[in-house]
Amino acid sequence: MKKLILSTTLALAAGVASAQDVVRIGTEGAYPPYNFINDAGELAGFEIDLANAICERAALTCTVVQNDWDSIIPNLVSGNYDVIMAGMSITDERKQVISFTQDYFPPTASAYVGLSADVDVLAGVVSAQTATIQGGHVAETGATLLEFATPEETVAAVRNGEADAVFADYDYLAPLVAASNGELMFVGDRVPLGSGVGAGFRQTDTELMGKFDAAITAMKADGSLNALLADWFKDRAEPPQY
Image 1 (tube, rainbow, N blue to C red):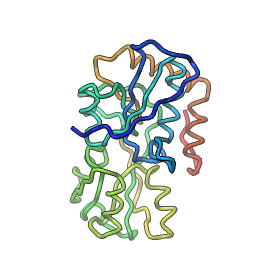
Image 2: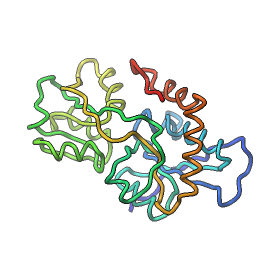
Image 3: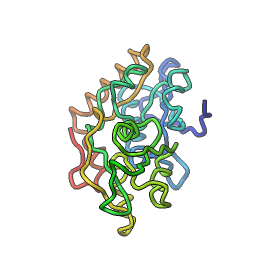
């Protein structure tokens, strides 16, 4: 089990919550724009802002902690934190181990990126992050799956020739392609996977999950969730909305 390596406290204007309302939120800190470490060495991103808003609405005092992706579910289950907000897609397989709120990021497509548009993504070597729905998808195709612990390594594998293409969330890959000056390019069609992104909980923590779910429902109703999505995904031609 990997060690928690960084934490940051979200200061909330709602006042001091009771001890049972102190909530620890686990995130990866390596998947922009969902969650990442900014230039000041702090956790930032769409999900950090969303966590802050949810906790304020629910009158909770929250701490965000960084955890490696490959142990993020085991560390939730073992009690190292109480919630996962880490760009995690809601899937039936994960629901066997943890529970999810409703989605706070709508179902979105995954995509292949390579150094050439004619890469055969169904017969070549494709990199993906360990324990992701993208890795599971590649394993079911005719391609050879090459897994890495971090998303950065999956893209580096394409650049250094270890992999013919990387398969990941379109929203993660799009800014990398745009910044590559033509080195990286999308290959083939986008692939819809998962049921959106939600917050993960231990299956016994129904009360806490209900508070998060209620806050997400309220944010969808008053437009504040759409405002966050528009802010963090403004580079997309059509930012996701509810």
